[in-house]
Image 1 (cartoon, rainbow, N blue to C red):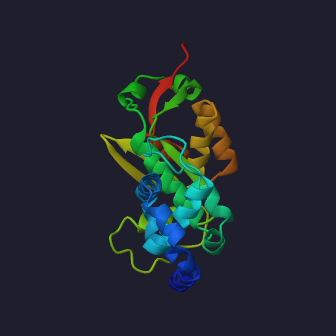
Image 2 (cartoon, helix red, strand yellow):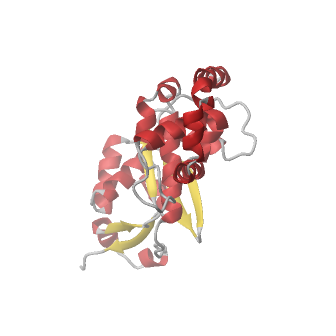
Image 3 (cartoon, rainbow, N blue to C red):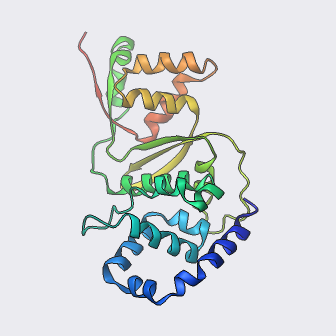
Length: 244
């Protein structure tokens, strides 16, 4: 990420004429556009922190022009920004940026999601091994997770610090899990085994099926530990058990 400052400077310089042009200033002052711009800044704070205020304003105005709001309620506006960034020049120059934007999006969606009870360990304690294995799960409405081929989760998490300084994560694939407990949204990195378990549970696999598939793919993984961490995160809301 050492070339980020140079890229920010060059990107902003290339847009200076556009930003200063009277027609764009007039659009910026438009109440609806200003509201959409503020919503994007609120919903994508990490993207804004990475590219800088001026570059983010230019990006946001370009996105608003191509994807204007279709709802007067702007709290959730900007769902398409992560995909849009993938084909934008700044996204091509900073290949982790669209992933960071997606995690910002996960955070927004988690914050806005409905309330639901969290699966308690006490609900599992009386299950037999066979019942546990045959159970399916319901996720918390606030749960979001994803897998990234670049270290977007590490970069995103580093920007939770007020002064992240120089960020130099290992350039490896990573996963992220976003949950909400007692009103607080939290994010954590997850490994490939945890992601495979979550993915399997989301598509309707039983706990036993998800565990077996994960063990086959990642024979060195601690499957029990992975389930324990997922339960502790608050990602799950309920078990769907079958009678025995």
